[in-house]
Length: 445
Ligand code: PHE
Image (cartoon, rainbow, N blue to C red):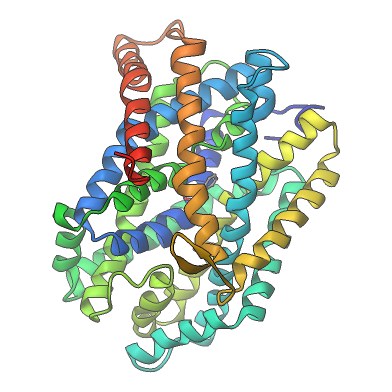
């Protein structure tokens, strides 16, 4: 995406350039920080199985739908529905919901990303002490709100600085080097986990041996919410990125590639982290601090090169996702409100930053669903479990039942078969699955 959408809309240079940016958006804290910790919280294998099912039945088809909306309309998420229907069409509310979700998600995302940046410096100093000591350092860090706000400020500043300039020049080039590096380190850590720790086998059975008695209705809802979150779906990020695509792409194949890469990276992160969790007898369900409290125990032995690169790459992965979140919000104000890129990035980025301060203060709690909870958890719960799935549902109904998108001409027989299958799932299975899971999560059914 070059230049300023609306004034001079750019296109991706190549299919691979687009795939990298889309994978850059999808692969982020969701894969390495969130997937392992929610898998721990919701009990392992059965949760993973539902999550994988959601990637197939919900993730791939909605990714196809978002790419179709983006590339047909060449617009931001609100403008896209206006263009494909009419200026006054109520469908644009779907776009609005997405812009709002992007706004809230980025506010807490930046807090975790900031912590990951802080850990780069902790890693440079080196992690020392016993496993218990290293783990308790995180608790101390979490309680220090000023520090969390400081790192949130730095990370948001960086995100704003990049989005102001338009993204592709730097980020696209760097993605090509840094994303593969992240994958290599993760592969290395997970092989280490399987073959050289005593927790490897337990980790594999925790992740892949389903025990459905452990799975709650909230677990199922979270598995689906996470499928949306990790693939950047339900809020128009892929509509926005798709809007810079030429109209001739194989939607189904492209979506499948992105989903496959994203899922593989999450699973490897899970293996790496749970091997350590079981080796050191840490509680798998500690929650959001899992990666910051367990990995450093290993890093105390591997030395700073691995640990510094890990947190550096994690921060980078978070940055390429944060950019796509901010881009959704910013592109709306540029396209539809005629603001300049600088103005919308500064104002909206600034507002998101302010909201994020609430999320950075861990001991500021308000009652939510029966108990006092930090804003961080509330923002995460509402956006991931409700806003993204509802947005995704609307997107899916729109493409499956309103646009009734026909098979793009050309292409092989197998591509046509794949496309038709995905479209069938999108029309019939995806909406039913999303509705059932939301109602089940609300304990209505
Ligand atoms: N997919 C990103 C991650 O896994 C987060 C994200 C969600 C980015 C929604 C854009 C839109 O970290």
